[in-house]
Length: 385
Image (cartoon, rainbow, N blue to C red):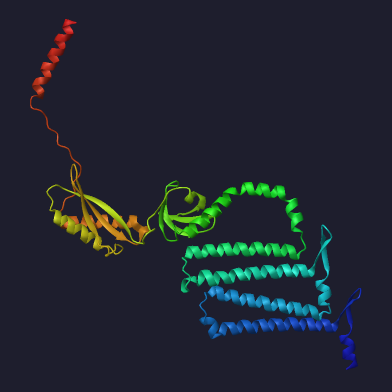
């Protein structure tokens, strides 16, 4: 037994007053192996847990929670393993790393505090996103997806700014000295970012004014851009054009120009398709054919009902408009194209003719007799001169 104790107390490494013994190494390895075993047990329990699978979380979120728990267990295990090496934790945390101006010292405890602040900020932002944005639609929060995303973005920026100030304070960095030494830099950055600030303020106005929301069909006059609003951020708005191209528009461009929002009052939007029929056509038959064409399309709403409007007596045709409503405004061009195909088929079945432009020319009967007389008169006038 004495030999075992003597072996365990054998000094392997000696640095000044610090001595690393065999017992410390065995404890270190034991704690590491135990940490790995505990991490495996916890991960296995979560994977097999019924209540964990029943949580209303996506697979990526579940994997993220398991990954976070594994890292926490490893971190605690590493901290415990360090203590088995004979280090005094208090002395280790108070160890000076480097010095800053004005005799400020940065110790290990300051760096650890900064890391804890970063982790806490990230976790707080993640949990707020999950609670407010992802689960907001299932709660009584009377905000649409775009506004919830805006509140989340503002909350995230505030949390990160506060975290930065706390980190600087934990590292004993004098903010007054930092601001004074960087005043000229801040002025230049402010001038360079004035357009960014305009976009940020415009984004807040768009999000909380409610004149434009995600999913709305809009037309931005200054950009001649027509498309669907896919996402509203603090600085930019993403609009998907009719060609399925995502256009990133600075928010100041939207607030400084006229914007047509087809879904501002309601999700149902009215469109029209024009068509002309030949003079002499049965107008009641034309009306019925147009209504049949509209009702046969799956994306045309039955309520409000499609309507037919007699617009004018044209030069070559009687002109009508088919008015229809749809809540698929993004596909309105495709719907109008489909309706034109259906109208042509209905007119062909009903023997309704779509005319083409034509002109009637009337020749005067005395044109030939007047032409020689005019030439003779012109010749006589020329001889007199």
